[in-house]
Length: 74
Image (tube, rainbow, N blue to C red; front, side, top):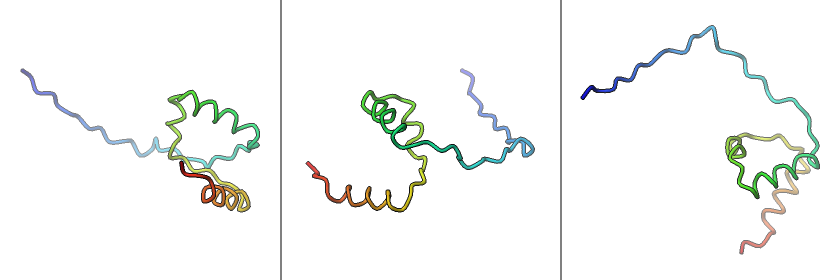
């Protein structure tokens, strides 16, 4: 039986593209119904973005932190 050989190819340096920071504004009221439906219906594509970070305003961050500390755990 032939042994499978793994061949590694270096990534060409000239093909590296600069990754731009996301810069498309979206209102939260437009976003959360879509995210809620995707979460509720367990859409696979939503898991692709689990580790992405979102920038939120300081006041929204404080509200989210306060809410996460106050809501019932059970």
